[in-house]
Structures are given as structure tokens and as C-alpha cells.
Image (cartoon, rainbow, N blue to C red; front, side, top):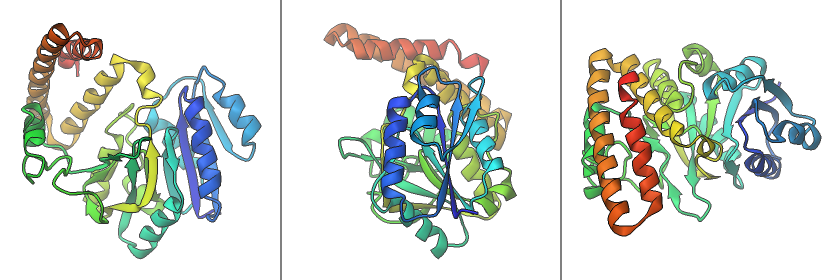
Length: 307
């Protein structure tokens, strides 16, 4: 029985998967782990690559894209590690990252999930831990108050922009790009909720963990480079829809239908505002990237009522 089962869910991300696995081999050598790769019906050569380059990996090949939550649950059910490292295919471990996450778990036996410090490829810090979303926090973001007053614990509360993210601490939830999960805690709360196809599944898991008495901890000594959206970017505007559809599902599940309805109204208003602003900016300054973003938000606005 390995101490850690490393689980990577992949969808058409061969170029990132190769880097992810290479980083794991290089920086995970001092840890007793086994490797699980779940492929969600990729159409590139991801499966052939894993079979040839990493024959020791346990490979689960799905006939269709079953989503991130369900794919992780497949490997979780078959693996045996005491801890589970859930690693995105576009996340690359740096030296000592896995050891730091493990040490945090050993030092804090009441911790159910430990999250790494994430960085963009150019070295910029990537915010990776948050407070649980509320109607108020979503309103502050809609009105850009979180950007106007980033040091405010009220307006900057959701992304915790008042904090430099340079010290370990307990948080509400951590981004699922690289998290170490205690199997005992996961089995207690029942794994990922598979109704979340993609996005908010880690928010939901952390919420249930904390309800069950477990803590979620941010570990800045565990440094990981994260491309952010490596395979998701392939889905275009549908990715934006899935992002907010999952957020509505989180609100409905944990805060009730009335709050979820209020969030849908707020989301519709926000999408309309971003559509209009994007159109004005793209027209005046001739910026095609902004125009594409404006179209994506218009597409979202027309879909909100279906969530």
C-alpha cells in the first residue's frame, strides 16, 4: 500500500501531461507513491503516450468525457494510498512540493485537504485559495469593488486579496489543481459530487469537509506551476458556461433554491454588463480579444435561465 496515490485526469492535454508526469518523476522521487491516469476519451495520443512512457501507471480509459469529478472518483475507488494527490495535467510539481504537502498533513491530523501555492509559468503568483462564495461576494465582483479595494477584508474577501498568500493558514477552499487529500476524510464525506461535471467540485468537497469537522489548509512551501485551463481552453465559450453553471449548482445545493435564484439574476446582470463593456472597448480600441470575450458573455447571458 503506497503512502500516496497520485491521480491525474486528462482530456486532450498530451503536451501538458508529458510535463506533468516528468515533473512528478523528478520531484516525487523521495515519496512512496503509485500513479493513476484517467483519460476522458482524448482524441490526441495521450493514451499511447502514457502506455509507452509510463507503463507502471494504472491507466483508466473512458469511452467518453465523464467529467472531472467522476473521473477522479473512478481512480479514488481503485487506488489504495493513505493520501491522494489530485493533480491537474497542466500542473507541474516543483522541488519539495509533495513532501511539504505530506508534512502539513502529518503535522495537522485534523486537516482533510492541503492545497499548494500555485504560480503562472512566468513566475507570477496565482491566487489559489478562497472564502466560500456568497451573494455578497458575487455582488462585489460584479461591481468591481474587489478590484477597486483589494486590501479590504469585505470587498476582497472572496479571493482573499488582502493577504499576500505567503504564510500557511486554514482557509475555506483551495483550487483543485494540486491538492493532497486524506483518504479517511474523503471516505467520510463521500468523495466528489459527480453532478459537478467540471468546476466547483473542489469548492463543494471542501465545504462538505469543513461541515464534517475537517480543516482545509494552504501550504505555501508546496510550490506548483499551473497553466490554468490547459485542456479546458479547448472548449471555448462552453467552458465559461460550465464554470457558472457549476457555481449556480453550488449555491442551490448549499444555500437553497431562493439564494440560487438570486445568484442567477445577479449573474445575468453581470453578463449583460460585461457584454456591453466589451463591445464598447473592442469597438473603440479595436481589440479582438475583448470582442471574443464580449461574445462569450453574451452567450452566457442567453444561457443563464437554463441553469
